[in-house]
Amino acid sequence: MILFLSSVGFAILIAIVILFQAALAVGIPWGEYAMGGKYPGKLPAPMRVACLVQIVILAFLAVIVLSQAGSILPGWSGFANVAIWFVVAFSVLSTILNLITRSVWERRIWAPVAVLMLITSLIVAIG
Image (spheres, rainbow, N blue to C red):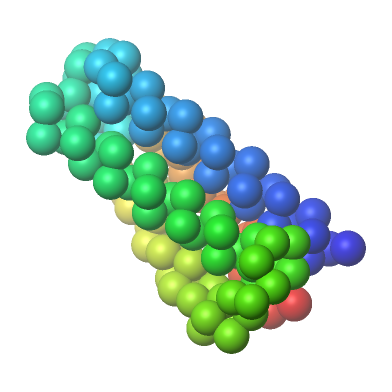
């Protein structure tokens, strides 16, 4: 049960991040809350494209976690057994970057999200 709840928690957190990235990609002026706050307001076009790439990566991470927990794609279990550790490493890196960013808003909003993603992905990986 803990694996299921952790995987769903991870997927919900990823969904929130994906929605945020989608908002940035369509031009919502929340640049100060992302990418170190380097682009306050609306992101420039190349960074908006980067948001779209991040959405694909984030969705793939969610699929890996849900697969590892046995919630979806049972045929992926062999792949998910290895890939889950990539998700954990990604979550560690995300946590570190969100904790050391110059953007106060990023630290306040996204660092806790990253920490929760790290915890939930680690529970699924170990479980």
